[in-house]
Image (cartoon, rainbow, N blue to C red; front, side, top):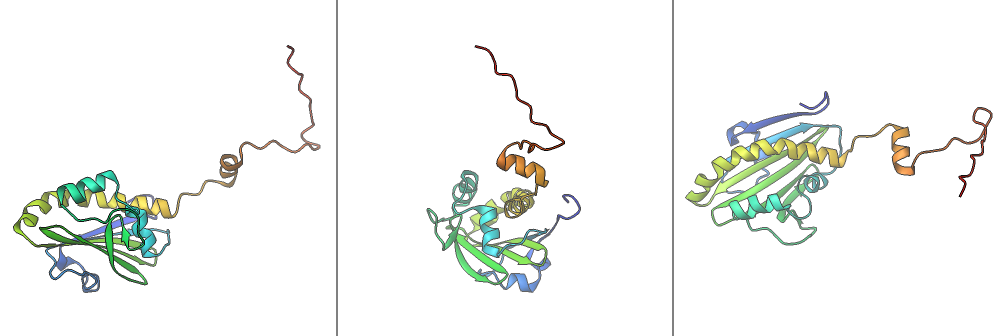
Length: 193
């Protein structure tokens, strides 16, 4: 929990997720599922949330995990049809589904928004035995990283507001008071050469 307004809940296992969430997956069968939800005052459409979480192109760390360890095929470069190299497989008013695959597994990332909440669901289908071997240890790391991904995205979408005077100083530099009755104009002596 962060402050009083941000709280993250999580569920692991397809049997622990609502059917309304599972039906948005494009996978033929779900062998792994998790769902993390952040209560937040930040508001944006699902695609903006997805791009705040993962960017337009994958970071070096994401490339290492997704391509290097999981062998996922990611699109190169920026595209309105992808988020961080993942293909946009579907969307609705309050959700966006990302999809990619490797030779041994197929993956979905589901970003959903609701009043005061954003959630990230991860769904995997093991296409080969290697998926069952590789993903369980990586899933523990994934579950540790996901709350930070949600919090970082919330900070990107709704950065903390500075008090007005502090923001004005940062944006416009220090202000000097206008001359008036309470602040007489004084001339400073010139330095001698």
